[in-house]
Length: 185
Ligand SMILES: CC(C)(COP(=O)(O)OP(=O)(O)OC[C@H]1O[C@@H](n2cnc3c(N)ncnc32)[C@H](O)[C@@H]1OP(=O)(O)O)[C@@H](O)C(=O)NCCC(=O)NCCS
Image (tube, rainbow, N blue to C red; front, side):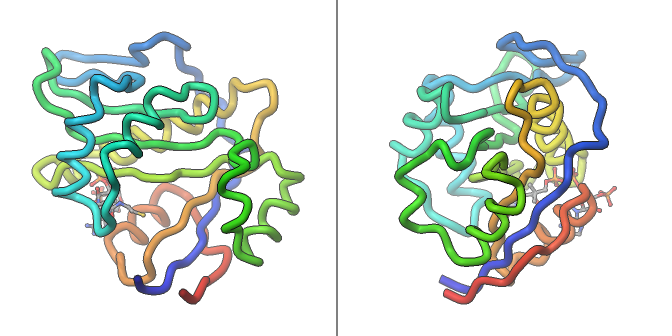
């Protein structure tokens, strides 16, 4: 494992709206919708192609099944043949007690700064054939839109990215994230 940096973005200036339905939005070519455990195989396949990190199958099944803890969205091609991209996030990061034991010191400081009201992007991936078409940005915006509607609205969204993942870092910076800290592993 390489080093990682911790990025966050302040969401308080965003006023967009989405529906709360299973389908969030669609056009003639794509559907943006919440994912279910039936999407786990496709998400796993996409993660193998796109991710620099290995995720076991149960990660997807557990995340897609647990709607209380996780916000999981995907972009699918028309008629849902292909999963073009997906994101798994925790709207209330500190609700996941299992993760607490792994908090780094910079992470604890970030969480305290936002009074524990902080969302976390656990994973985001777009199929290599579909990169640079704005799908990653759509997934981030879906999370921001959802955060703005929650009663216990998080003050920030944060994530970890490997410090050698230059493409992803450029993407996060373009979508409004700033580097908060650097974690040596
Ligand atoms: C990071 C990732 C999700 C971005 O998805 P995407 O759909 O290609 O991103 P977008 O099309 O919304 O890009 C938005 C902007 O981010 C920047 N960006 C995205 N990919 C970039 C790249 N490869 N190189 C440089 N800048 C990039 C650009 O400024 C881009 O705008 P532009 O295309 O108008 O110049 C995608 O590259 C990916 O799945 N990577 C592999 C998985 C991964 O590393 N995930 C993150 C783990 S922490």
